[in-house]
Image 1 (cartoon, helix red, strand yellow):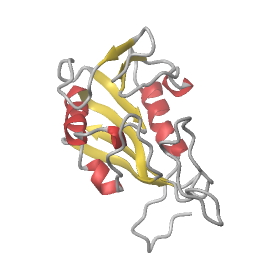
Image 2 (spheres, rainbow, N blue to C red):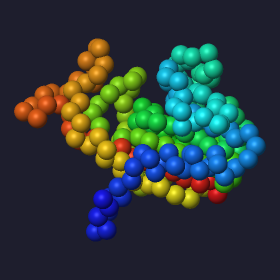
Image 3 (tube, rainbow, N blue to C red):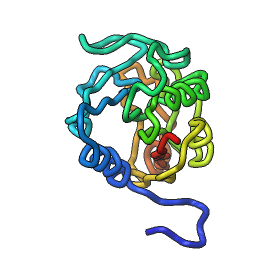
Image 4 (cartoon, one colour):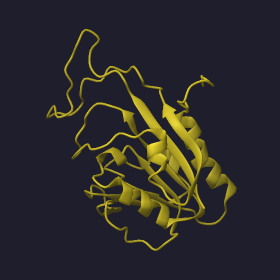
Length: 192
């Protein structure tokens, strides 16, 4: 699938998930994971086996810490084995602060694992600020070695017309339907 002549590195969500699973299998003791922007849904099964600390701007579950992740995190340096977010960074007004804080609270040798859009429709939840190239996304996390960086295209041509009841994310329709160019940027970095 990867074109060696392309500057675009095509990766899959399964490759990203494998880093989380392998880290858990290769380390003993209690493993800690910070789920940044966890939202109202339960943690994905992928995070089973970790002691998960959930954060979100809006507390929607009993075990979530309410915090603005664009401000300094209330955790000590090197507190977590893995830092994880899924489609959060596009909603952050100061993502460079969040990236720096994720690196600060990640243990040496730990992982920063993040997904964010490169090409996606506008979807304000509550706002929608940024899109990320693979090199731009990596640059947000200082003191890190890149293990995986590229684009997942598994839903590239999905016809999305908007999913929010208030229509805040609705796109103009044409002969092909709605928004049809979905590239998701995936990064996995090891804290050095």
